[in-house]
Image (cartoon, rainbow, N blue to C red):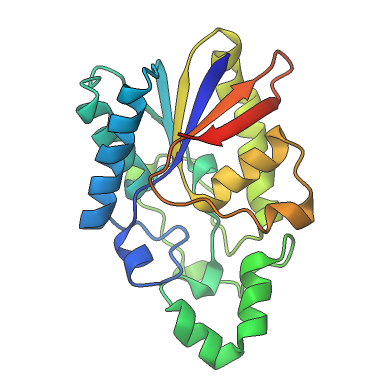
Length: 223
């Protein structure tokens, strides 16, 4: 059964400006709003139902899910928001323009920061970290993450929370981020550390996944 829909949020304002975003809470761009609405139309055209919705605590993820539900006229569904589905934390790179960062540090170094599985970005100072109250309680002060670090929070949340709904036969929509979705796909489909770094997930394009009884992926495709 095709029981899991993944979507990377629509284009954000900082996607548009080519900035490292991470945990910085930015809104969708005008194009991102259109992408979310178009994603909903695709789901409707393919008669794909949604029972539960999970998002990160970041606005661009939440806005995407809300726009999808509004377009589908399913506003009665509530969102389960979790920091574990947040984008990878880009540490001291957050807010910086990617092109300018490559000019300053060299394209090869920036590629390592962005595409290595276990290398962390330059770390923030703990005193520079501010966690919005709206995100909830018990959110750790993260200084900067590798993709490996992101996997270590996404996969347990999948196993402890989302998979339980899947096993109850519910159809789940996860509106999250490029790296948190890569972390989940890596686990579900046993993608190697090398191959996952090559996987690019476009904004606003729904991914339909078939999950088996063991909670692992059988196949996935864009719709």
